Image 1 (tube, rainbow, N blue to C red):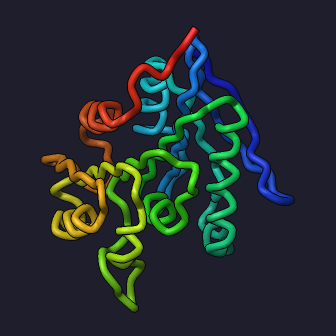
Image 2: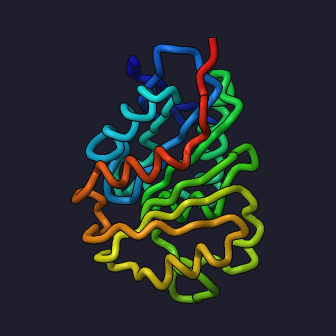
Length: 210
């Protein structure tokens, strides 16, 4: 496995990124999307990227909002374009199967703007409410029902976001499943091994080829 610095081009903007690549050629790609308050390069993101690459997946991570002011300036169209460009980046590297792993705010963005080319989705404590809520970021049951790819949602039972909300999100998804993480909070820093194992077990099998 090797890691390299890469760049994501989105319109006139260029964003720094990191790509973890397995030793063998592979057609499986993973895009990691971070939360609002941290980048995609440390903690569980780094450990998962290394684990997945060692298991035969290309893993891309991009920092498209390095500071809170950058995040506040973005529109829904910006988020959608960044997701599309990130998936295209992996497609251009020969990835035929794309999995998105998205944390917190990133999970919200993934649910709102999931590119059609994505084959499966893993949500780490998505920061979004199930149902229609005028005063909070939310997603309707109809919009969830339109996401036909397999989705696994990991949620800690000590998160400020309730397990009931996580269950409601999953119930509205055609092929969704919920994994409860005992003792885990919203940071996903307490049990990296469990988070990584539950995510890895949802990935495509036999991704590498000669």
